[in-house]
Image 1: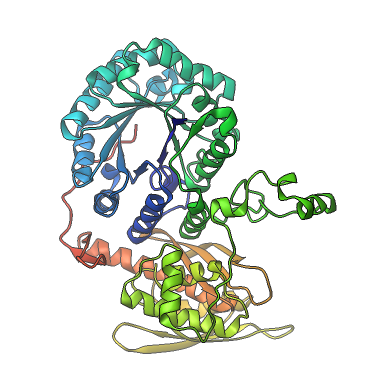
Image 2: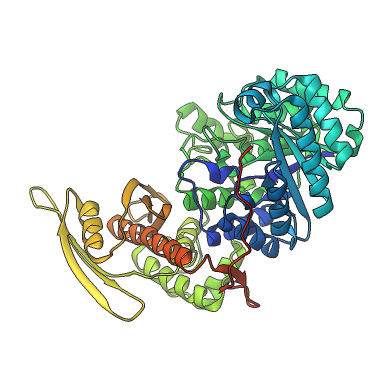
Length: 535
């Protein structure tokens, strides 16, 4: 069958979702997971927008070895150079440059003529090819562009050296048959199309992103650009899991295949949802908690007799087993380490010991420990920012008609502990107020969400909070069988990120590099990048 390649832009377009900020460590962990998932290309960021994005792309090039790493740039030549510098360490780099081609963008946003835009696109691609062996040119708002002018731009950029041309429906404006016709038109009317691969990039403003992408695949598109869980600007991007599982489940119709290891989809979805603070809605296709749940008596009867009556794919096909560990609180380190490796985690000794200690605490409280519990433990104990403030003790009293009161003790790296108490509208509010009395980090808690990792009264609760400060917006996470404790951990996790960002800014944006053992260490600051100008 024909191979369709997956270009994952979770770390670039996905992170542009309002409130979707990720730390460098979180980006790297998601990048490693995308590599395990088997995507063909990871778009790691937009290096010219900030030193932080430059470092993220640079680091991703060092971490990811089994697939391409791409970075986005507008058509400004200084930004092309910055992007090339960020990508230079990649095994297989791709420079992705974008420029609008629709008259509405050219006239009202860029305020340039069609000819000027054509010249800019060609110049950007030519410079990109001098720096990086593979260059993708993306015609922003292609869906609302004049088709013949669009073909002229693609023909010129391919002649200039573009190896991939991308046809985006930037606003999710078209209908599937209409978009398929556009892709087919480009493939038929660009004379040198055989020298470049055709990619599509669709947004979900009308709920059509997956359908648009699949319609393009049906008429010959070779690359699909998408994100895990469909995260992205406005209503989001085409959903990776929906596209991949559609192509797998309906291979008879599409006649194509991908290289994605579908058994890694579930973990990828959970990781992105947790880190970005965007819980997946229960009825979300493929990865929603209800995607394989059957409540109707008629459906349950069919499932009991033959699963294929009401399931066109299995939970196992996306890695959703909800399997229970056959180890308990009596199990040793080797058994726990082996299970972590089976789940795809490779932890250093310090990380392992923190995870093992947390596992023991959970196992003392729960009868059954699931893979989901272990994922929550690793996220809570290992994949976190450096702890400037650490929760040492928490006591909460509440009830009706009692006044919710929280007593909090916090430790700092110098070995000091500080304790205070506060009242609030509820136990979580009291906890946050008490923490604020101890921690001098001005902020506004803008979002709070809690969800259960597994079913049952003893389930681990995962809390996600979003705080806003002068340093930016930060997502904090915490997990515990006690939701109030999880809330305190999540809030402190977010505040620690604020402190780390402030420290990073004050020290001149210290660069993070990989040491020989794979751990992260600080190094000298990066070269200044060009002023960003978003096309």
